[in-house]
Length: 250
Image (tube, rainbow, N blue to C red):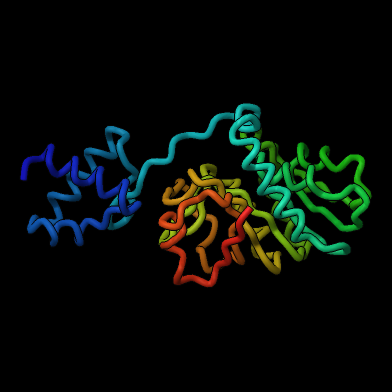
């Protein structure tokens, strides 16, 4: 098989399966594993895929900045935020991660509902200015891309708080590689919050499924569920059927 044919096949399999396992593909094509690994290295160098141990994953494009993301898929994110807000009971303590989808949760919360909202996002805290909810804003170094606090100060504050629900923001969701994000320090903060939460849910827009970002946050088994748009196709969610994670439509 010619190099161009192998590379075309690799691209097609990535689109179909969401991953390439080098040994499995080598066995299938009756080629050496070194040949497949060389193809993957060269394709990664050209920005066509992301190399991981044992194979490759689709490349996740870089996110636009926070202001630009506010205009993307606003109707879908609004529905997800409203569904998430409906899950929150009076008297609970919740943690809202940063991001434009989680901002919609804050906007959907009834102003008179009494609860405690913890967040490390100043933009989300500002959404709750007129609410009766108690708001605890975690400080630290501001990561401007996502408008959230990170670093040692944020981690220390998070360690002293227990929450009933954590609404986690991620950039990629994969059945084998879990949920991930693009920044090392932001991922560390997300892991710290998850460790302090009784249940964690992810508001998941369709483009995040089947992708992997550079920094791992959690495995699928660490999550209670995903809140997904009703129009997400069944075949996108099928790889999660064997897990205990709950898919909640919005």
